Image (cartoon, rainbow, N blue to C red):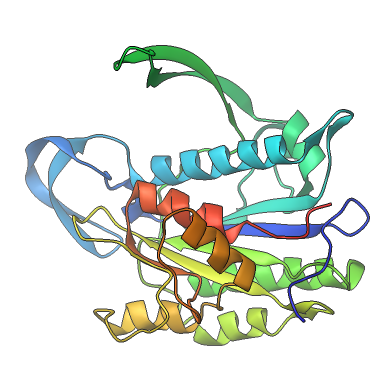
Length: 298
């Protein structure tokens, strides 16, 4: 049976994020204080007529991945420290394609989780609202470790990102042939600008350890007020060829991931693929969380 290999310090697995850093990622998730521009501006093929306040897609996505990295460190913490059950990478693609970690991890494409834990680029003080025990909320200051920053410039070279992922994953499998298959999560708000990604994605998905082929998940991030589509099992209700292409290049969820998604209140059927369409920030967080869960953590 595939996707059952033990994940341990002696047999770690890897998670690789491909992060769209194109100019359109500067768009605000939930815009406030809309103000008309003197002249329309076109960025990454989309025309804007107003400025707005609020968290941009690039900032929201950076927060989501930084939070996931922190949670992974907590999940893998033991008495002696954080165990490197996972090696993690973040590849940005926009004006250029390459590693997105900052600080002392700059330039590294795949990092053991223990090194990730010890080397955030910085630790920010942020405000968080928590229940006060009397039915209300109180604002507390919390520490928020940050490993990479939001960037939004350039086009969307998705094919090049998949090719870079292929290089990294191929090298990993060569060194860890019996690992739980690598998980690659591509997060984007737009269509590939360097060609149809089908071929490069297929080549990536063809890589396999003895436990099964690579898991490739694709999340389409949106600021539009539409209901997100999470983990569909069919492309029938997707609106256009671009959405259907991302669905088709996404691999099915493992049985464990399906069970975990349903446990989290996300209705997921057999045959569901690791794909999200029109995902807002909350849906993106849920998508990333499900995509990084393995059953045999030791």
